[in-house]
Length: 237
Ligand code: URA
Image 1 (tube, rainbow, N blue to C red):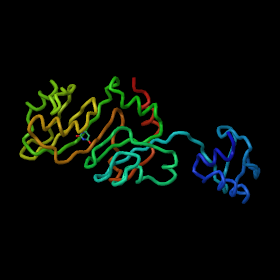
Image 2 (cartoon, rainbow, N blue to C red):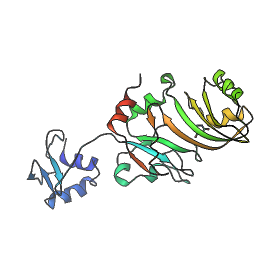
Image 3 (tube, rainbow, N blue to C red):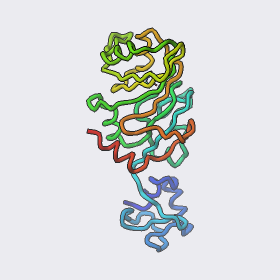
Image 4 (cartoon, rainbow, N blue to C red):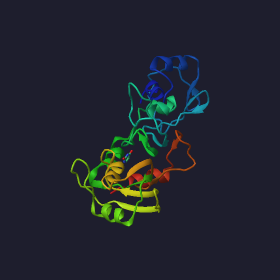
């Protein structure tokens, strides 16, 4: 790969800006100062450094975000702030996108990547990747709701959901639950409770497949996936 392309891809500026870096003697390949932007390098085998810092070349980026409310799960929007707007410029440079959508008012686990293949696998209806949500509900959630979700409930558009798994954490006028579903229909959790005449007042995703929200992440914070998390996600059958 051309040196200027590699550095531009890794966020060191446009090809023109990269040329300036080379002019300043800031770039070395295997310890030697290089000025030729068209030089071909192999980032896996050669040490490319800028101002003495090694450039680790990666094509893909994998981030776990604790999505805050009020932000939309999209790459751009004319009105609202998006989850991509919350990323630092270097991460944005990889042109990542959110894997699936959480509603504007929903919080919690969101995977952000530029790996289209992984995103496709995670979202494919054929793979039945389970997603678990924690929710607060206006209304007394009972075992009957659990049985109904297990059998599938009919949503407002006539669609009958696949079996969902309900765990009641607190049953009362304000209930707290965890619900695991294997699909991702629009507003699905909210509409499943509506089908039971109950209202979701707070919703947070806590897991998606093997990936579990890191509770250390504050709302709006994100971090790279660990190699264990990434390998487990990639092992979806
Ligand atoms: N179900 C919903 O209703 N909203 C979400 O954001 C995710 C699942």
